Image (cartoon, helix red, strand yellow):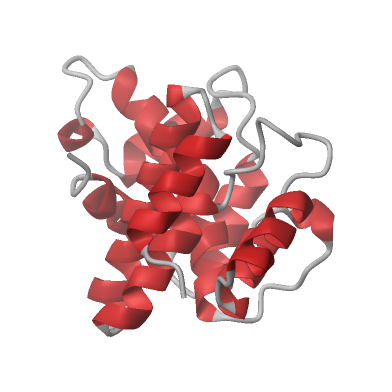
Length: 181
């Protein structure tokens, strides 16, 4: 079973852009926060949660038209757990893969939310996560010109699928993002 370090090497091998790597780290942090703090996942399983968060978009630069299907094939070949592969496939609604595991629901819920929360932080006076709260996120969600690539419905759908109230989900994602160094 590949480790988190293996996942990081794979992400770096398959991506050239720093932005996609940073996004993987952000999703990893939020997913790991949920796994550890909210769901009490044990260390060995938590490492696989980290892998899923880190690798959910690793194939996007190479195969944007078949993402995440092509990446899932590579993960299977490399011996990643079925739950990790399902989470990678399930984070894209277009794949039609149902999110049946808690891990898949968590990756889906954290994917777009991490990017949106970070975007909100960047427009705050000190560009800090300390200045972001659910109210600020809700306000920016109403501005269709802000972070327009983020589907607003997915932000709410992710929290709902995870069974976490929206404002609490925002707070949890912020807490996870604050662990990134």
